[in-house]
Length: 135
Image (tube, rainbow, N blue to C red; front, side):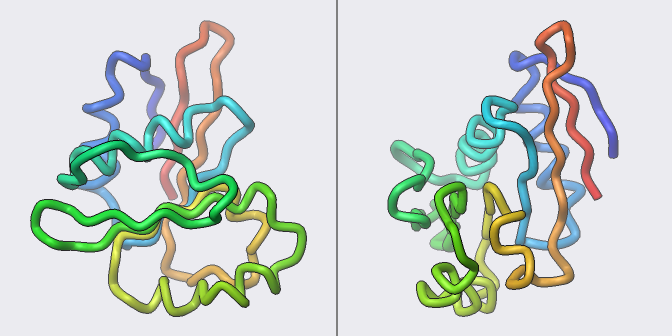
């Protein structure tokens, strides 16, 4: 899927992502400010997470529960310098739990990512709209 969208269309885009995802592990690639966290917040909202969601920049992972009792993990590996840091925090156990896992800055832990993950590439267009590519 390759789609241009305005931020006002974020709810529709999030629904498309969830409906077309072949895995519960979603990897979000994009430059700073491209909308990774904003999209993840909308995805969490649509999955029924109640309350405030935020990027786990300093804690590396935030855990949420949906209204149906499902787990959702939001990772932010921007500050990871060595993959061992993610390994030491038990990243593999998170991925093995059949929970939703949304990973920002996956490039920093590339060798630890499951092969069946869905890749989401976000870019900012010159008109300030966004482009999403899902692979």
